Image (cartoon, rainbow, N blue to C red; front, side, top):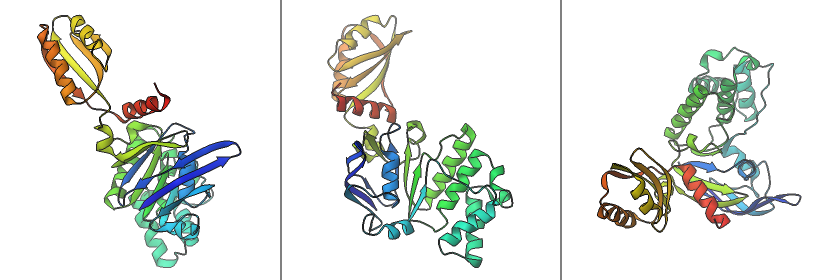
Length: 308
């Protein structure tokens, strides 16, 4: 559905993208993760047909961004991180304006307006002026606007930016509904915890380069650093010292009969470590791997790139 190869974009001497290769399957919810300034917005603007790359190419739904930007815009809904609204329009008028811009008029436009406002839970605000809406409501209105032409692909740049906790939950539920509708979605964010329970695939970008991409479950269950918690009866100092001296193990926290640590290696390596802990007389009551987070994976990949 979405593929890029060797994307390069420079602003003067600054390289925002340095040979970016993305691959997003049809129907995927792709979390595009990176720090501010990593190149996420530049990538989405290129995919939306609003910015041309200096090198490389991109295709969405069979349309080439460089050769057919107009065709790309017909199949893409783009929600920027900073968006403008026409404050002197009512919510319903705002939606009809964008429907008209896409060549949708009459009864079809009115039905789309009503259906999309219901989808984003703004049906009761149709006659309200846009400038009276809260930040969260305006964000949802912008999402509805990006759906007016029923695009196959949605590009959402920091969709939860600036929202309070309740508004974030509301936005997440709407995005889940769009997933069920079969849209292919790219969501950029630097808040990794927002994406873990929503995305099917993840791509991690740093300084314009892709660190890694793939299905979320594979990203979290890779053969990289794993985190463990061990609990024992009695003082944990002896076990902590043994773990700290084990190749590839790093103790992060101890106390109250518990040791938290990371371990580079597979399940066999963890089993060997546990066997050694027990062999020295430690009465182990709990030894388990904790769930790897997107933050853990991103930090580990960044360290590997830096040679740390």
